[in-house]
Amino acid sequence: MPKLSVIVPFYNVQQYAPDTLRSLRLNADRDFEFVLVDDHSKDETPAILERAAEDLSDVAQVRYIRHEKNGGLATARNTGLDAAQGEYLTFLDGDDWLAPGYLAELVSALDELGCDFIRTDHVQATARARSVSRVPVGRRWEAFDPREAILPSHRSTSVDYAYAWAGAYHRRLLERGVLHFTDGLRTAEDRPWIWKLHREAESFAVVSLLGVFYRRGVASSLTQIGDVRQLDFIRAFDQVIEETAADREADRLLPKAVRTYCAIIAHHLSNEDRFEPAVARQLRSMSAAAIKRMPQDALGDALEAMDMDRSSKLRRLRRRVTPAGAAA
Image (tube, rainbow, N blue to C red; front, side, top):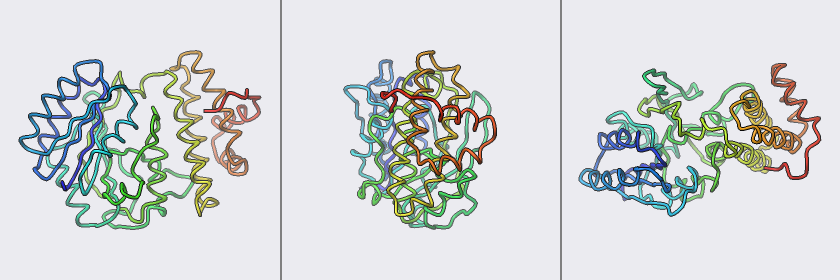
């Protein structure tokens, strides 16, 4: 069994994949496994990965898998999880990269702390600019119950820092069915996943490691494209609400889930100009239907706590008559 499996999905990233793969080589170890998943790229990415898989096999264990059709990031990560053999698992996106030696530090932290998973800070890279993004948790290098890091509702917490690649996870979570993503989600795939992780894992820790470089503003990234796939955030957050409502601490946790869902809807409404006109109309219709599906007591409290601009937008949607087909 490898000590660590690194699952790396790629899709049409021929411009960035060489940097990603070079960083893997600078982190390579015979005890590490790199699981490279091509999600049916249409550019030169598969050829780059084929060469890299052969090259990296000299310094690490490598698995290269190519999808016969494009399934999206969640599905590609699941493919990697199904193939991975490591005691520990982590993720990297195909257009991001790692600092040299970072993976060894990650393994050392998990060995030392012995918890189900750890979360790390990361560096956001926008062109030549760099900025540090930190896990919104004050306790560091100390294992504790991840449920304690979901609240309070009124500020950013660990479930709002949803990046799957910002951390590492013990294999026992995979065996318990906690690590897989909702198949087919095209965006916000990390949101149901991070909530489930915090509800169902028994221990976690936040460690002050900086080694993941997250590339922002990539033109081909789904976050930069205003098409209908972006609306999968509604399906993702519906899942968060549904699963949290079934939790043993639903009364305590649901207000946080509803408040976050409202904030994300308001964010998309404030930026609807970047969507195609038909998608913008669908966004408003689906958001109105989503608001009506939320627990109404928790929704009322969330709207009361929001600033006037965002609250007004959502209240107008709440009063809107929605067609029967507006569900996500």
